Image (cartoon, rainbow over all chains, first blue to last red; front, side, top):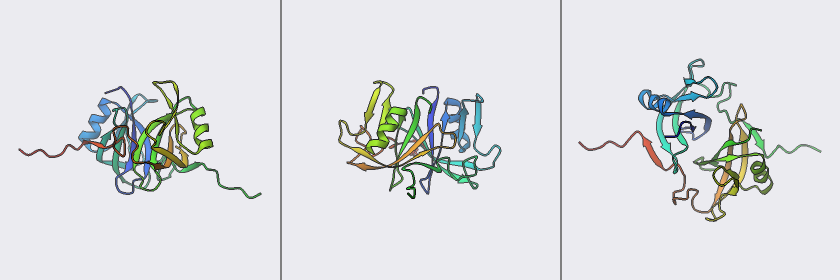
Length: 104
Length: 104
């Protein structure tokens, strides 16, 4: 597998997209073994798992590779309250487009 | 914005995750302007849009940036039958883990 693969995390039940992290062979192996989502941190150059600090963990249900095997989709259940470090449920909580209509 | 941003495509209604492509400033501008999903092709080094050949287009409903603004989520409606060039609805159609139980 390629060195670093973008990995989408989606809620297994609600289907909400929570975040995108990066997998390598080692983190993927650990994800499968522990059944919790592990990533490779590009900035800290080490494996990390959701919930190390926050306690909000991602329990793996299913893992899919895309058709050309350069992206992963993990369907997971959230154990805890939120995924994003900002306190939002999802990292994709801020609508960028279309902008809300402004009053004239 | 960073040069190339991974961009998740999710169905606006069914919430299925269809694919991941890459956006740059130019493709994102075109996506907003045309309201159809445009990407930057890393291999062909040019803008491309879903449906150029297949006719299966992605009509943009909402665009989200993630909390650290290095991933995009586009919620779109599929105009056509499938997203994946293999003929599957989604590019994430092949379950990789857990493997189906094999009979002994």
